[in-house]
Length: 354
Ligand code: PMP
Image (tube, rainbow, N blue to C red; front, side):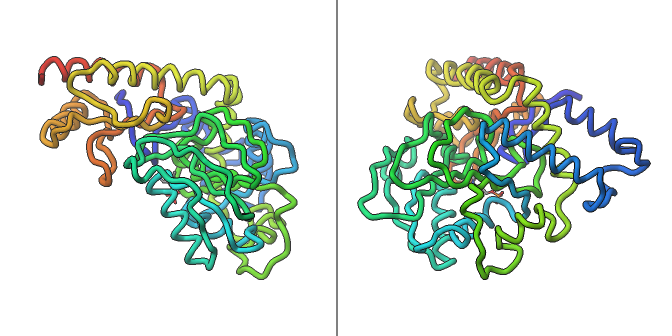
């Protein structure tokens, strides 16, 4: 069965990774056990986690001045854990680009952190990316969501501020080629571009990992010292992430995948720009490569579109409940053929329903 899965996450995996998992499953590396059954204390797993770390830092073009933590609890846990660990004066800045930025703010505040909104596009219904102005006061860091999964916007380049950046890259992790200058933390869940749910990756400057009194599962110093194995780590999710990292490396890395992601998203945006039925509300220079939102402006027709798309093996195109309409997530694993099949169906639907 061949379908295209446009879900925002959990999302599709590269076909070759699924094949590799299938082959590995009965007996991982000749061990007689599947990777789901091996001990996290085994040499087999130590090798996986070490390779995943190296592959990730290489693909991000970061040196070993950065530590990689493989954690659980989603990006949502890190909204509070990051400031708890590194916000020395408990005062941070935040760029308000939509739902997930607001969630990051709320969770940091619950942890007793003062959060200043230093830029926002709320007034424009988050249809563009706010221009970030240098803050007046000194802040521990500025939190920025590089890609807004629900609103369909993204930063093309990172703003340059006096403060370091903390980046939620959940929905464009290794999908866009950013220059990481003056960046303290890069974090996100694995379930969109790096494999499966259950794994959250935090890449953090090593010198920020200092002794503190936080409970162990929140404490980066303890987690780093234990090589992300303070408790039982999500072995299968880390193994899968490493396969996805290998796949991306073999394909030519982030520059190559960014080129492909641009080709896919341009194909869909070009159609939407010329459509007489579908619209995309996002300002052109703020449009996301990985999450494209669109609608007919008519709820009934949108519903019909989603039903008929499913009948044509184009799955999970329903928009997020907060914005309605449709959303096509074109993460790294989505082939060009998937974007092409979507555009062909959009054209057909438009002809039949205008
Ligand atoms: N940030 C962004 C940009 C997201 O898209 C999401 C999830 N869709 C989250 C944070 C929350 O991630 P998690 O479900 O891993 O907690």
